[in-house]
Length: 496
Image (tube, rainbow, N blue to C red; front, side, top):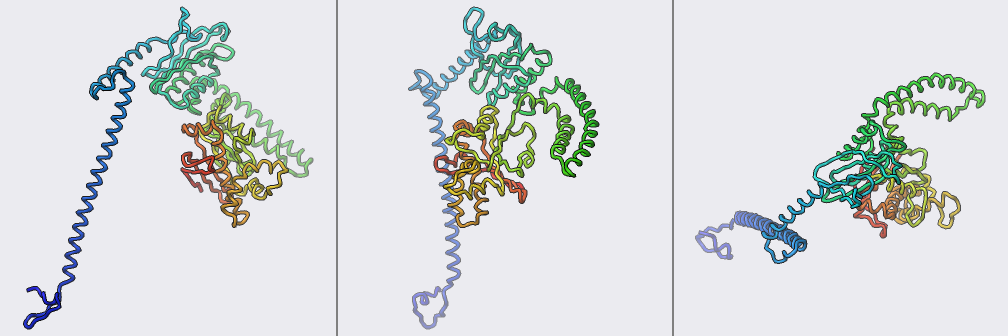
């Protein structure tokens, strides 16, 4: 019998008093609550999954209906057509277009003197086909432009991609030829180029023609950038280069004996003249000859290709400080980086007018078509120290007139670390000025456009030469604003 009396505060004789089992009841209730909670969580998850599925299905149907609406606007008399009939009409039109494209593809430009045919009618434009091709054919030049010299027609057809025209120009320039006329057409991601080329001075020989064929094939295969093009074309040059290298090595070895004798006599004479002082140019001469023997002669093919053209991937803006040479720190080799160095590695905004820095930027971005711009700052920068210590009303020296380009970085530093020491403020400003320069790069429309199209990336770098550490980051265009002076970075890396 349950002890009801104890629940209600009543007791009677002959009935044993018993405390209610509160712990057991509590545990039982907790278990029930846990089961109900688990069940409710499962139900909520099921409901959320169902809602998510319904939402995804709704969006999918919206996309399908949007595409169908677009098709109806493209095809005539299909406004009230059902989906199946509409798709059938689309298939029919696609087949017709492919048939017409095939008919056009059978025709090509057969002359090198413009688009005029033999009967005076215009020839059709080069229409890209579905197969990759890279061909060369002979054609006669016209009297006006080609001086009756034999020229050739190069035809390329491949997938369109950024930098394709630059690769084609590299391939033609690598064999010392020039393009005198070009026709190009891009349809549906495929592109076809017909370029009339002429060799400078004379008709190209068999070696040049073979080299151009290999270069064009490399363009189609997307292997015509930088040193890869030189490797592709080196086949026809190898015998000629080996012979040339042997001559250079003989010259170098024969000059070494004379150089040693010259340096010996020079050292004796120099000691007498300078009382034991070292002649800097004698040491510089030794370094140059060492470079020639250890580097130039061993990589003569590479330097020969650099003599013809340069295709750097980087435009580097660094400080003129003698302690922070980018080629030494980051190992840039000849042909890899186009550089400009100035005091405090500053980039003036477009509104400040022309300078040697934006002139170098113009050439690197628009002519060389570099893919990366890297602004490198460093610790203990004298230019930044001059900027931070400059009074606002003092603007007399050339140095002060230049570093005032970093005034925004100075003001930002003063606002953020006003209570720090002068050295700490300078260190903060060294990095702040880099980011200000990255934003200033975006004031040039041709830079901002390429960054938006992802054809160009803007990076910052900071070299701490006291601890031999390097920090690298990339400007995030989406989170940056020129007007608001706000910058956002991504892909940060620390090398130490």
